[in-house]
Image 1 (cartoon, rainbow, N blue to C red):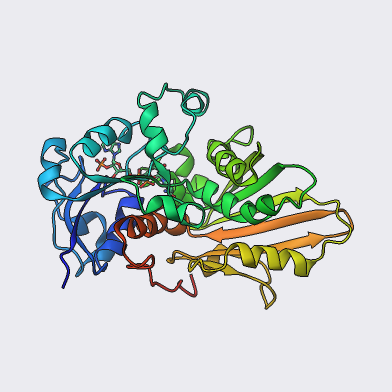
Image 2: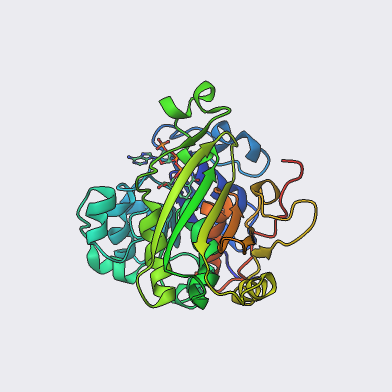
Length: 353
Ligand SMILES: NC(=O)c1ccc[n+]([C@@H]2O[C@H](COP(=O)([O-])OP(=O)(O)OC[C@H]3O[C@@H](n4cnc5c(N)ncnc54)[C@H](OP(=O)(O)O)[C@@H]3O)[C@@H](O)[C@H]2O)c1
């Protein structure tokens, strides 16, 4: 039996941290050696994550940067953006491999950090080294990196929806609107005024509709694919589901000869060989619905062509905590480590959910 990789999770009391634990606790190539929380140091992990009773008997510890090198080979940072920022260079210097779930290393252009996140990026060289952790676009680069910048959930859904049509250049212009409905777990485990249950339940509430941060990473990735600048306006809507994100990404098409079969073929061929992409067509529910991916790392992709007006909408449904966060982070980690891409992720979705 090969030796297991020692993994530390920083920010283990949060939602993405909990989801990493759910996956990695049964990953046959991983030993979880450290899980940190400031608030719950010394307390059992199952106090915060009772669903993991019987799977993990460890306690949370405090995060001591200098000691983590003795305890782990790979570290997952499930921290708010701006917090991972200064840990990453030190962890890399110590020889660890890093998977950062925050936005701190996702953007290649340092100037975009000032524009979208309000701070000057202090490590622009590391931005060049980081690989954007979307395996469907960066599988080869992930094999040779020590720093994975795991994508945002609304960006993941938008990029997966638009990549095939951007790559094939079938739209009138490279300017898109992506309407994303997303569940409350996107906001993390700490309650605040807007996420308090009576305020959130039954809501269908647009937010950051004049410029959502994930637009920057979606534009970056889609521009690379197109080989020229792509503009994307992501308009997120908070809905009362706990999990799930659905991107409805709209484009205009002039080509009279395009039909549904051609679009289906180009989407299917773009994603050939990608285990976590399912193309949805027909059936009782002919379009993707996050309801049918909950708990899994799948992204369901489908589309609607309204020829009358020349509108093409591509839909992508994901579980924001899985393909939109921790599932995708483990998928990218598997590639980086040379493990089968679906190790720990062979989990069918829940139904009913
Ligand atoms: N939720 C999603 O759907 C989603 C999807 C994709 C990416 N992400 C990204 O993933 C990261 C984690 O998100 P989340 O939803 O898991 O958030 P969360 O539930 O709020 O968890 C954040 C964790 O970080 C710790 N923490 C908070 N502030 C800290 C600080 N200043 N120093 C050290 N630790 C701190 C907290 O633990 P203690 O207070 O116990 O220390 C908590 O465990 C974020 O960057 C988020 O943008 C989230």
